[in-house]
Image 1 (spheres, rainbow, N blue to C red):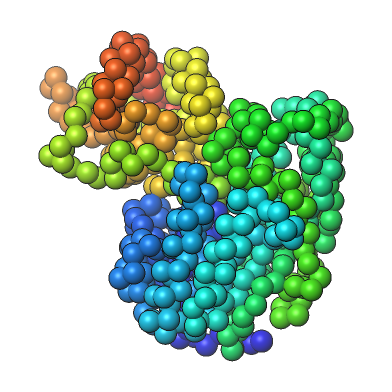
Image 2: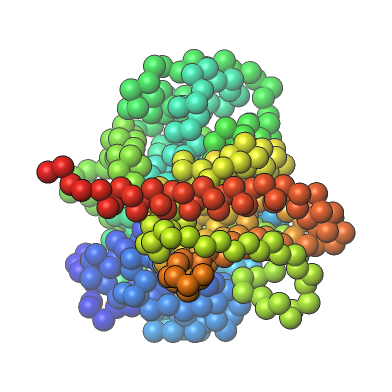
Length: 505
């Protein structure tokens, strides 16, 4: 295997997701030509690599847009997953894979590379079965398909890492089901990217199914204890209850960790199976080990923690959009589209500088909180978690800087124009769709230059339940939003004060 031809074009689907976003950067670092296929280019516009790739918009279940994105492509990475798309995500995944295979044949793609999940047992969870069926549907076509199957992926921001990290940190004593003794073979995201980028350089197409796993085979209990050791925590105590069901376990995970119940449910269902790489499908048949070897689970945890503590998390599991009910309108729907709409708009003026005002706005949420009424925000997040929503535990990728398209507690950054506009769209479970928008500008007010901040909460209800919901929450707005604005402006003035203090050096 040698370096790929310089004119080879590689397509990455799922570029806004956890692995896809990192794969784009890894391919670019190896001087490869990259095209990405996304539903909304705005969602990746803040990525550092956005201006270094071709961007095609469309849906993987639409033949024409998929074919257009694949024209001229040599190797196409299929990293799409619809685990959040309701209870029938398996059918959606199957249809998307069939469409992608057909479009790849018409576009004369030479190689498809798919990242699936290890599935050894005859009786598999719906999640693992769907992953395997996706690979089969892709392989039904005439384009050679190379399928890598991975188990638990460990890296800063991965769903599995976040589940383990938060459970271990928050629970010195854990009540667990018996499957915590099942074995697994985790792999570091760095090594997953090594296999994927190597596959992009093959001189000839390769087809087949190959398992990829790290050097350690251990139980889930051992994995948690290893994380505790790396985090300098005491050994965790496990109380095993045989009748603890996956449904209850996923509900508990959704309550304790940032991973919502809707995502935890299929993941927990997969934990019931032992996930060990099959020697007969050893990837070393086609790709040699990386020169520095595969990361052990202990080193993978340490590296992930180092990235988290340094605020260098490149992508997170929550970067991919979560499922929203069909009544929630798409981004950017105009006001004349017919939906009822409620607005709570408040205007404030301040002497704080534009730069500091924006800094305060961009730091909203996560560990910084929501500038007052934190108990009410916490209770709203708790309510959302209890009914299977994302709650507040997702936090944010970086405490000070946002990217368009990334998650922020139970919001997602829909629009970001620095020192001008921040628009958040709600991903909590609601009978409708909600936005929170901050807009700032330099203006003349009362005969002097000031900064104006317009803070707008917008809600588009679905059915009578949506109208009732707005009526119930509206009285709280009179406290929450003025408090938020006053504290936000106070923080901006504090930034100005400290930046103007004379240096002691």
